[in-house]
Length: 151
Image (cartoon, rainbow, N blue to C red; front, side):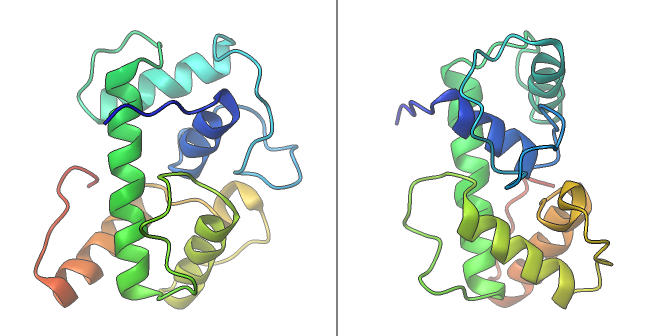
């Protein structure tokens, strides 16, 4: 399935997964309203880091393969948050976006499972690698399924 994320949505996904695409002075960080091109240095570095982590071609371009992996990563995270946090309404089967409800569910997960809140949106609402690993471990214990693509 092809995903046509707008640039602000792609920035939100990168930010939300811990691949910081811009500074966090936006009030809803990690959710971005910046729909400018994805060719600034910091965003391209975030894209390359994302691509490297997911074993993609590291060209800094958000092409169809990068978008598909981003969508799959969000689908997995939404599923795992639905299993562990049980947000209402559930995050799935919504579009694979890192929006307000995802950020709130991640923040609740971080609080509930011992990730120290520091009041900083740079960390409190982000599903970085340690959070994704813990989320995957807990979800796989409950469901028997392991989403190895994220950890």
